[in-house]
Length: 92
Image (cartoon, rainbow, N blue to C red):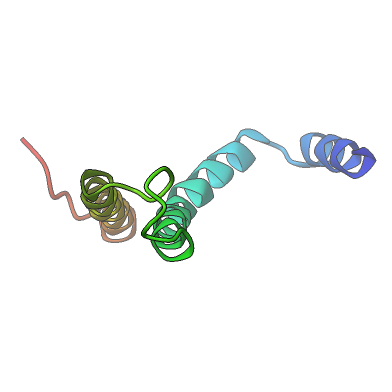
């Protein structure tokens, strides 16, 4: 707890614009989120026994989870392509 307090005071006092830290943290969370989402879905399907009807995901939940993972990963790739190469995929 003291380390977090000291680190945050040092960051706020040392960086000329600490708002960049928030933007970097948000971008990092956006890129890491599909990996965490995949691991949650993967472990739900592999660790929970299939005969445990109460906790094992239903067929709808499984398909919805995989579809959500594909959409979320696609959104991340679109954001990466747009930021790195300036490719505008959806313009009007």
